[in-house]
Image 1 (cartoon, helix red, strand yellow):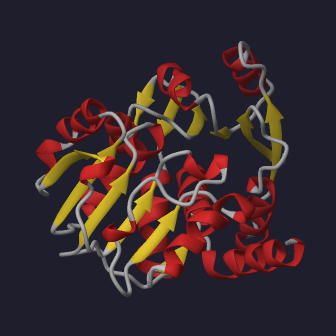
Image 2 (cartoon, helix red, strand yellow):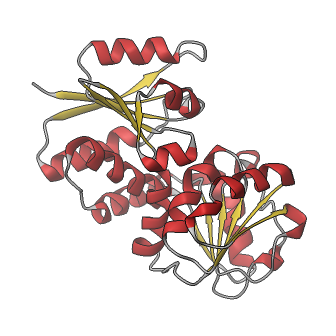
Image 3 (tube, rainbow, N blue to C red):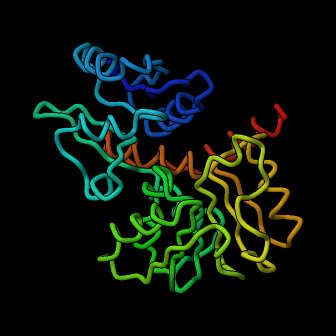
Length: 275
């Protein structure tokens, strides 16, 4: 019997996750089907329970339901507990296990695909919302020299730093205007690209050869990518992170780790062909 999975969100019609997991399943010879599942803004739990009751094995969760998914999970992985957000659920017989694969996806894309080791580097994380919370723990695990979290509201940056202060890497909190200069890696975890903005921080955060990554991809990320390139940095969008976090979810469900390289190449070709 074919195992069912889905990405649950609102909106969800443009998600590339079904294509990604179809390629993973073919590559690993897994009998599974992966669909998009639109949940009403006030009906996430009902949608999820109906899907699980119908025999589904798990799902990915996207905006705006990651915090609600965290509350509904009966068990959490350490990285989900640290982020207080869940983007992957596995429907086990004993309950729902929640994970957060965003941070691993980001770090794997930076270190494997962009070939940028993070150990000993200066990292700037822009934003202190759910996206930033989902990746900070994994960034810390890569052992950079220091991570600075900057946000429009300083108290939110301070709260995020405080929640990860026990993990053994120096963390700093600052406002956007106080962002430190000449960073090795800059990660934009804000929603600025949704509004077509170039960057929420000044170009002094960059130096020649810095890696500047926006979690968005496609046309939404273009303003940030152009800004980074104009100031001598290496621009990178969030497509690799998307594929790598999906691979983490696939492993969480199936116990198999797919090869992300051909999948990312196929998606990149399709994205460039449609632009």
